Amino acid sequence: MQINVKSILKQGGAVALVFLILCVITSNSERLYNKAYRWDAAGYHAYLPAVLIYNDMSFDFHKKESGHPKGEFYRGKDKKINRYSLGVAFLQAPFFGIAHLTSKFFDRKSNGYSVIYKKFLAFGAIFYASLGLLFLGFTLNRYFSVKTSNLAIIAVGFATNLVYYTILDLMMSHVYSFFL
Image (cartoon, rainbow, N blue to C red; front, side, top):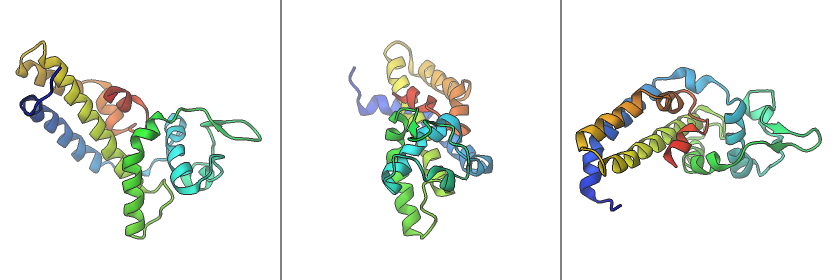
């Protein structure tokens, strides 16, 4: 399959529409930025501050910095071992890094769990969802008209669980799996 500028422009309108609407909804979501990372999301996210801020793969920083006293993502009594893989953290790393640099630049709390990190990671989830939709459009264009492909992109973007996992549970692996 050859990807060219023309095919990107064909899908660009539908993907841009989904992207912009998701950005507006997410930017106004106070609920998203005030909740602690829990369960799977806590496990995926813990790799980022562990490696990039604290240099502590024992995750001793988590209870203090996350604002959530439970260590629900790790196992072991003497030695804490994260039960989740680091694939999601790998994809989130560029956005986490930008958030960390931004928080340092503006002299904000640089612990890996403050609101600025959540906002950049929210943008990252929207970015990966949009790329996934763009790739879906490339595939659909091989078999269907542009109009049908664009309708399918909008339907997948707003009528499936993708919208939920992009806006509310963006730290879970679903958006990143969809992109991949």
